[in-house]
Image (cartoon, rainbow, N blue to C red; front, side, top):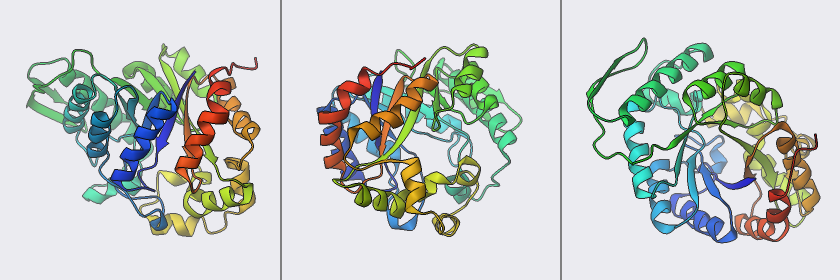
Length: 322
């Protein structure tokens, strides 16, 4: 079992994210996963630095820990030729420690460039073309590609790592799981849904399976749950809502009725390690082997200390119940 630490770029500025990544390496985490946003989910989160700059700085400040985007949309706000170059450079800077998490994107971040945010089926077709372009550019030489939605013309990435970064494809349903099998090296998810992995394996996928586990650490349950309610209540809305709303103000309006009780059902909250291990076990039982600790609590250092003291060993020893 591999364990990662979520760097919440919506909640912290760039220097603080770098500091947390260094602490995560010291605490024994295997990787850090960083969201790639233009906007935060809620205005009161207050941040959204440029992910690729921060990850480059983390690469220079760390030695062992792997770096993962969780996740980048390579179709609208970015052209795939640009992120293919960025990922190749980060792989070189980090000494091969970078894994490239990709997905179909959210309107929250992608609409900012003034392009239409298409329906989900088209976004997945665009993602397939984008990954074909990335793979083509990573193969070396000058390349041309003419797709229905995306194209490149006589493009070449001159600085390529000896080994291409692993591509992890975010999946919320069977079509994306099959795409992960076709063009990815692994699958990325947010729900403990074993059916995703069944679809992935049925389509020939055999790579690592990453999943985010929601939690909020504080010395008492109420403080932890209140912090998650204040900054992370958007997480209980479900993917169809999360992918479609355009701005933090819309997420604030859509989540005005979320209660502490809803948070406690969705997040492991408070000081009891058993609650965290129970939440993680659902993902282990579903077949995930790379768990991301996504802490929405008010004290990241307290959580990292809690993880090292109470969670690291039992999480690594976790096995599926069936």
